[in-house]
Length: 214
Ligand code: FES
Image 1 (spheres, rainbow, N blue to C red):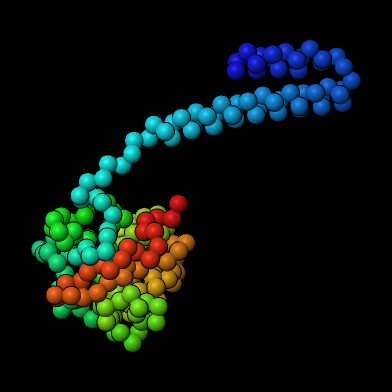
Image 2: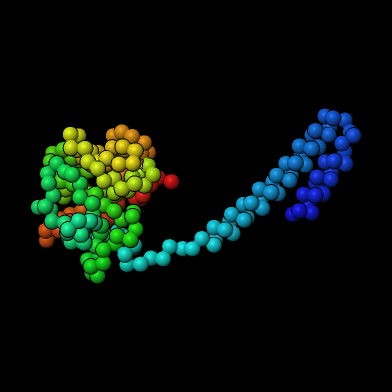
């Protein structure tokens, strides 16, 4: 590649005494050829580099949320214990949860994209589409902000919005997690749930990919 570039450079300088217009055209064409060559080299380097990025090792703690997982407290005195629907306060705030594999009881807190927000609202407030994936007034959403990936841990009681503490993105849990204000580019995806045996259980994966928008 270096030889090829040297030859092209030589070609440019070998005709410096020709008509200026013709020389300018020759220079542009040859420099474009060098540029394409360099870009090609760069792309192949990136391609090879991408192949070297280590694959994520899946462990029981970071495997993705799945249908049947039980939602447990992610923090506090009851950490890792199933959330009881009766313990949720009507009108919020949200409880931060992780999914737990019901067969192994492993809590999948190893991947931030498994973070879930659970909140209980007046059922009549939910839009029909949101109510479809809710359990009565209990709704669940991905807890990862679509803007830059902070955990959406704050609550605005006057409007019943989830609030991201990083840049004040507001999301509406009664309407599919849609963005009410702030910089997030997309809604946080809802998690379809049911209540069974006094536990909150995921019935499917999130309705869209969780995590910050890339
Ligand atoms: S990371 Fe949530 S609003 Fe910016």
